[in-house]
Image: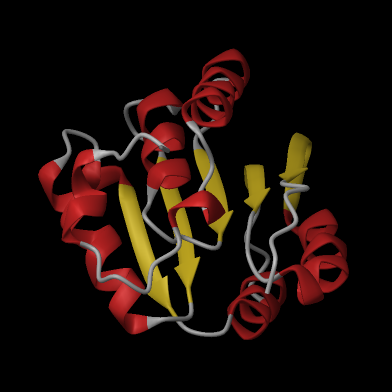
Length: 150
């Protein structure tokens, strides 16, 4: 069985736990934030919030993680996890279509030290291309390569 993080037990039965990043990936994200002394991170695809929480743990004390989720129900579950965490104040959850939100952020000139993409695989090329415009000098973009049945 796949280990369950505490907030996942609140999720409805339709949430598919293997879609989320694992403990190793989340610790890698946290470490990347620490190494870079990252202040601003973008998390495309919130799901349970594990990647946003990991980045929030690794960023500077004045840092911010923006996480994007299109599904309101899933966002509510993640927000509960953020509210219960010691780093929740560093996380801003935005509900909506990631492509639209990222286009607006690009137009507004927003820049991020780290961008992590783990959302709908059909839009990865679009997310990646937009992320290149949103990276701060020396920033890093990272994507998951997990493929799921369905």
